[in-house]
Image (cartoon, rainbow, N blue to C red; front, side, top):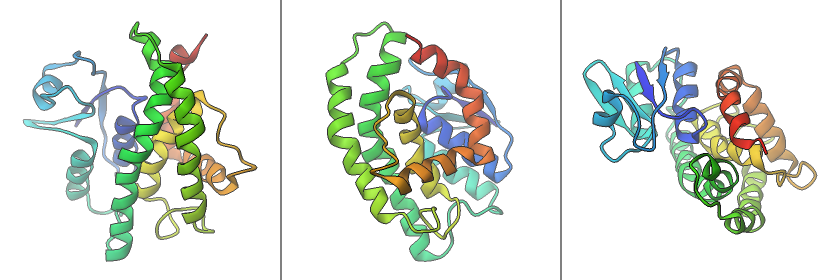
Length: 215
């Protein structure tokens, strides 16, 4: 099974970690910004990442790919079965993919990605998102995080993975997540990053992050 995309992307990372948690071996091939293999170009007609290639089956969008993987390997429950827990998990994935990513992308893209693409960064937009949008996100998570430290069912699920992935990118280029102001959120992010599947993914992307963030 091939995953086409760029490892530092929160959406690509989400799929890579989900696959690892499910025991699915994936080959990650670099793609994005109009570049990539034939499977990527056919499987992602609008140039979005990640894209999946599983034999002759092609698919794009991280949520669609995760749904496919979950159906193929239902054993490890990254998406809970209990109705309310399942619904909450889907909410947190949507929250991560939309609300958090929308704010986080302004910060990470303008502080790390833009210069790699030889584009002019909008640092004012990054600063505004860091000061005005991320605190609201951290406030919400600080309020809803249970004492167990996991968002749903007191264990690591897709909820934690999807909500944390965009924040991990923000933390690469921002020190705005104060452990004094948001202790539960800071501890939760550290806990997610320490999980073996996540730690392995972060180690693989580390050289790319270093190149993107060096002065």
